[in-house]
Image 1 (tube, helix red, strand yellow):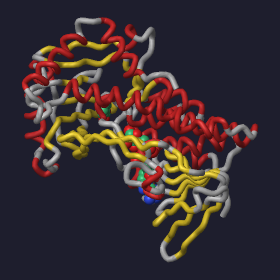
Image 2 (image 1 turned 90 degrees about the vertical axis):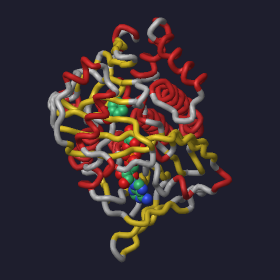
Image 3 (image 1 turned 90 degrees about the horizontal axis):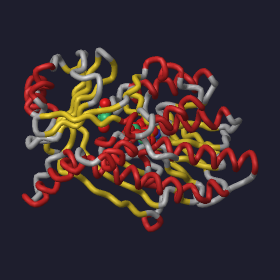
Length: 390
Ligand code: APR
Ligand code: PHB
């Protein structure tokens, strides 16, 4: 088989790129290791910044997102028994975020690829990029006993943190810059009315907590736990008890608890791969960078990679202009690092760090004090939360 752009990974990054390129007459094939059901079974964050939503609309997949997604004009930070509001709209001159689950968004992208006759191959095992440092790269993969080959002009690695793309770049050609945090987030999804229509991020001496939601009847709650904990250590009752302890009384008493319909632990990690290109292999999304979920930047940072790469590929095919491809890594990384900085900062602000000295703990408290005493500091938080321009 031959295509123009071979895409490894059928998560949001790979599907969105494939859909956008299709609309501009550029052929793609997406190779996904897992089944569609498996991909759509993953529960991930769901806060979309303005530019991400715009890209979805450009890809003609924004209809349900606009109908069912909820516009959030602000969120709360709870600390010391109170909750304070960050008014995103007022602080950013009118910008907001859209709460729409990543699972739903991925479903919409799959539906669109079907509708437009896109080629997404599921159950592709042993996917491997070859000859990526030449002008004739190709991909091989296996379905059962059959090995297939796809020749392409470019390979795009959208295969997430554990993918094969990054690993196929020689070690001396890339650098991994990484920070691993000594805790994770234990998340529970429950079919209950969310305690607050707007998100509540809570800093507490027992650890961080977050009250989020997917819809008016679906809540998503998280608590910080040691990275060594497992889901089995936490019954639903224990989870909600601990969540209550970390929230201001008025929030805890208003909370409706219920049975979890999903429970998982995500370790917190920051990672950047530099550069995001090797020869004719381009990395995008989680394949190139990971952020802790605190600033809701994961998917949104993937979106800017896709935006730059999409335009670079369109310029290549329509105008033979390769400047976008040549500068992709540099441009993408400039925004990636801002997302890293913000996610790291939000994480430092709100979590308990077991190895922090009393001095560092006082600084952390002062950071919160400063934030809510300075309009400029809050505006900076808001500007980053709604998303910096591409
Ligand atoms: N071959 C083929 N597909 C693979 C391989 C492989 N060797 N390894 C991984 N994949 C697939 C995964 O099964 C997954 O469906 O690649 C996809 C990667 O998807 P994501 O991990 O969702 O990454 P991405 O599409 O970049 O999405 C951006 O933002 O909010 C964050 O982590 C969150 O997934 C989100 C990400
Ligand atoms: C979520 O709803 O899953 C969520 C929301 C905001 C975050 C992280 C996760 O910062």
